[in-house]
Length: 316
Image (tube, rainbow, N blue to C red; front, side):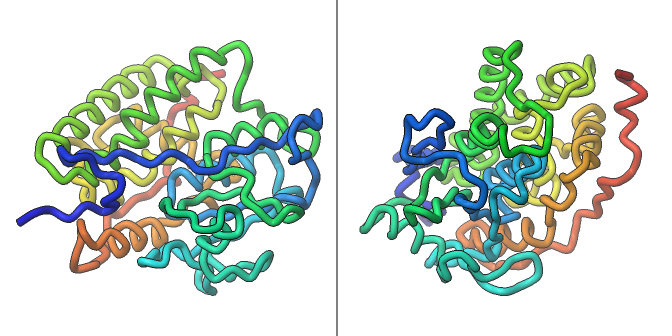
């Protein structure tokens, strides 16, 4: 039987998942160099709490205190052949800004006849009625830098003194961990799966070792790379371990990574960005090529509120 890829247009001939490039990469500027200027209330963020990429933008929005400057709408975690939808339900709503029924309408409004896969997050400009950007990396950077004048949060997630090193580590985390779980889960050949899975766990082993020496990825401060890693770690035992066959070890089996996960989850403004009902229903119900029964597991039992002990191991 020939395996059916989840996204045929993003599957290589040898069965490897090759993620599409982000389609919209315009920039919000502070100096008037782009048509998009920093204004409170002008931009709106479309996300889904199930999606790790979208959740990272929501985390940065929260940490920077931009909730009054940038609105947000949550999409239904159940995505069918029509794509991300806006419906009323627990933790998600209809679109109050444009009245879109589906996020694809935003893509069509921005680029008529858009042929790519519709993804979250989306940063929408209410003034020009088009997508500014659908790259989580760009959106996080703009929230941190361009929106500094509107930010109520003083944290700097991209410190200049570690700029080069953080960019290098972030690229490693993206390739081997963030996207690595998808390359394992969406592989349609044994060799592609094994290659991705082995590289994933080698990377987790490296990160476990790094976090055995310091509280966060860069000492005692939390930066963007930490939240990049967090968004995969918090979903790992619930969906990636079983659904994506990333089952060599759980995060629970890594003492440093597990404590680090609890530490980050317990930071102010973070728990509300994690919804395990949305996460599990999205992956197990939506990816019907991987899980054709669409049965959503009731476990695992997870308590992310218990003491992490990282502050005692690495006092400030």
